Each structure stands twice: as structure tokens, then as C-alpha cells.
Amino acid sequence: MSDSSKCLQGKVVLVTGAGRGIGREIALLAARQGAAVVVNDLGVDPTGSGADVGPAQEVVSLIESEGGRAIVNGDSVADPAGAERMVQAGISTFGQLDCVINNAGILRDSIFHKMSHDAWNQVINVHLGGAFNVSRAAAMHFKERNGGSMVHFTSTSGLIGNFGQANYAAAKLGMVGLSKSIALDMSRFNVRSNCIAPFAWSRLIGTIPTDTPEQQARVAKIKTMTADKVAPLAVFLASDLSREVTGQIFAARKNEMFLISQPRPIRSVHSSDGWTPQSLAERMLPAFKSGFYALDRTTDVFSWDPI
Image 1 (tube, helix red, strand yellow):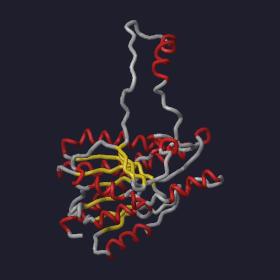
Image 2: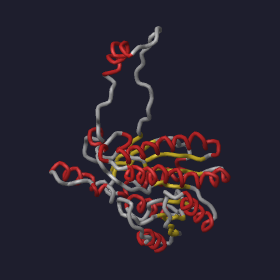
Image 3: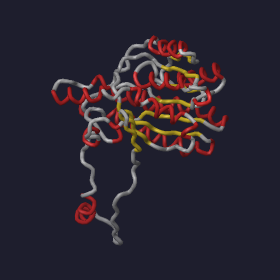
Image 4: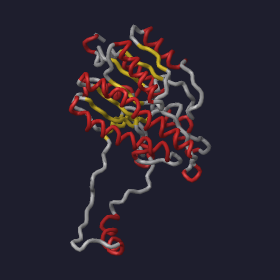
């Protein structure tokens, strides 16, 4: 591939959680598409414990072996000062920053009535807090340069639903609101913000139980959806190829791409005399009931095998 055909030629991209899984594949593809990459990874296990910059260093070494440019950053996205350091690392090393990809995450799954405050806070702080911290750290630089792209990783656990993930679902749906707000507030500075809901096998997905034949079959299907299938969409959204795309939610599922809907009114009723609880039950409920959403999970909505 010639330099002129690389969509990130001359760009600098920060990828959080880039030591393994989806983040790793994004960092590698971004470099192959011409970007200098800040490879951020704290090196924790899926629950957020421990720390090891080894995985991030392996990604940097691979990028450099292919002739690319990359640096390691081992800060935590949950730490505002750490977010500032990773952004500044890109600017000081490569002279600029053009895109942040908020991919870092942990899981602390638990059925809701047993979920601890610690499990709630840790997941919210890493996913939603981390996306804010890194995006906020980059915002002034993007404003001053009159351009930039932010890509946030949401999840169908938040967009649709899943068992035992109230903390993760709340954080991931919160990231959708954050992304839309960034898109609205920063469009005047040519800064774009979009979300991706990925379907891919990763260490986090690897925590799914496989105690029953149904669970085993589900995991077997997920394993066919490799992380490298998600990377092209993230790199596209990071690049100028998507210069007209902002405030959107996408999903990537093996060889399928989806544009996800956003909440809009679907039914309405009117009462010139106002409402009482009784009249709501008598008139509103029958009018709305056929439009109610079932207690769906992701597997109910995406019911066909990945293509």
C-alpha cells in the first residue's frame, strides 16, 4: 500500500486498552494505515486487577518491526492526570494528536441485587469516567487545531440489555450520551464523535460462563467474531474518510456493519383536560402497550448467526 492510499497517513492516534483484543487490532491497523500510535494499556486482568505494560510494549514492538511509529503509555484512563499524560505523550512525541479511541474497559459482573458499590464504581470509573477523562484531555488540543475525531466503544449490553451487567450497561449507554454531547458541543471546531458497539471475542467476553450446552454454543459463535473485524470501522471513523460522520452509533459483527437507532418518540396521546393516574391507565396504556419493548437481550435482537 502506498503512503498516499493510507487513510491515516500523517495522523497521530491514541488507542486506550490497546495491549490486547480489539484495542490491539485497532492500534496495528492504524499504524498500517500510516498513523503514529500511542498504545495505552494498564495491563490489568479483566476485573481490573494488576498492572503490566508488557502487552502494550509487544504491540509497539510489532508496529516498529513493520516500519511504523508507536510509543507505550501505561497510565490508567480512570485517572484524570493519567489521561492528560497519555494525550500529552502523543503531542510531545509526534507533534500533534488527531484521534482518541476510547476502548479500555473492565468487567465486574454481578446480578443486580448482589452487586457491590465497589463493582459499580470501578466499572463506571473506567468506562464512562475513562472516556470522559481522555476525551476531555484531548478536547482543547483538538479545538486549537480545529479538528479531531473521538471514537468510543459502547456495547449492546447498554443499547439492548444483558443479564448481570447493570454497571457495565449503565456505563456503556452513558458513553452514548457523552459521545452525542461531544459531537454537539464541538462540531463548531470540526471535532467529530461516534460510538461503536463491537461483537468480538476478547478477554472480557471470555468471562462468560460455559456451564450449559446453550452457553457453550453461544461462546462458540462469539469466537468466530474476531477482533480484527472491528478494527476497520474504528480506523475509518478515526480518518478523514468519515469527515461527514458524527454523533452516530455503529455496530460491527464479523462481516456485518450496522447503524444503530437512537431514541425518538414513537407514539403519542393527548388529553385536553390533563391526566390522572386512572386516565393514564385507561387511555394511555392501551394506546402505548403494543409499542412497548420486551425484556430483550442482545441475543434476542441479533438472533441469526454472524455472517
